[in-house]
Length: 469
Ligand code: DUC
Ligand code: ZN
Ligand code: ZN
Image (cartoon, rainbow, N blue to C red; front, side):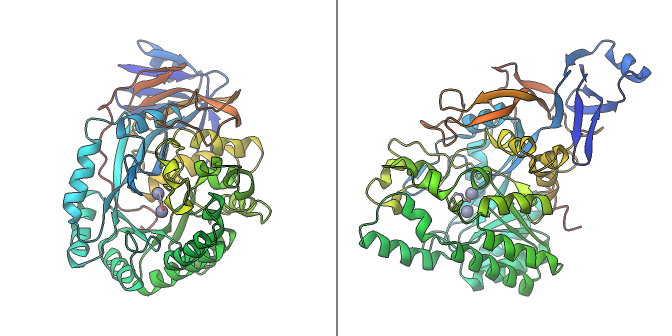
């Protein structure tokens, strides 16, 4: 069964050109010059999809999601089924989710439990990182085995004392292990011990509303942790990937490390580029709870958002992921009605990443090729999935999005597909729209219809980060 996508502009990390894309089964067979004899021949017997006036881009690769994550006495509200379906609606065809091990738990058993949650339920392809919440001898040994099995990245936390936090000694040991086995250390870089002191003091003063989450998770505590993580990575001779970076000062630490020649990488997320502490986290009443995530949204007056866009241009920020971690207002965010510390941390956004970063193309912050690079190509390379994912090229999986660059629409809880009772993006006007999505050659979204199936998504064992080779 072959499909020919013709009439569109194919975008890659290096540019955009008119081209025709021939899909054979699950893979890209060829990228053809329009009007060529080969293109004319390919049309015979193929299903022809007209992409005139559209962009044809690689399916999005979101390397930071949390389906069904246990957090703060509840669970992230998207299952692997609902979350991957929503991802497909938004033009994302691969996710890398986080399996979780906490102190005293067996890494292998935790991973198996996570695999079982996903298996048979995903609409798109998926892989895993492993969160090591309890670095001990067993966990360190297990890291070596996991790298050989395709779990090639490990998240550590400098925040959440008593729950997830690794102390500096544990971090160093995990980094040394990664230096030996080729794995990539991903870091939640916030000084959680200091944050918890400030949070308790704020609560005791009666400062209980959601915005206090942003006040106590100070930018200095993100930059201090980022700096410390970089220094530990230098000592441990390990590569480092900072997750969900939101503060200018943390970005500066990444830039210094990179300018010094270190293998330090960072991602940010659409919420940090488009939202702010003043406009979103500080909304009246309890509305700000919908914007509680960690790291927190930062002040627009201080210019963090502009600095993050600049970081995306300079490559000090190499990846945009979502940190999709959805909670409903009712019965979930509401757990923190009288204490901001009890609001589950997370924003759902797996469906909106391609659109929200495309807004940077519309406003001139980034170019078309950089959009694809940030949302598909680099995440695939960073996490050892390239060229199977992240590019439209012969032999790659036929994960392809046909994108209308001009359509205008408005995001709402009434038109999104994530399992949430609110949208953090409610009322946000968007230019650009995902029209058609192919996942390994199968149409999963077409003209406003979902054609995918739970279970069609396959598990992806990953190679080592291709930025380390
Ligand atoms: N860190 C994450 O990466 N996701 C959800 C919450 C958190 O602190
Ligand atoms: Zn985190
Ligand atoms: Zn996360």
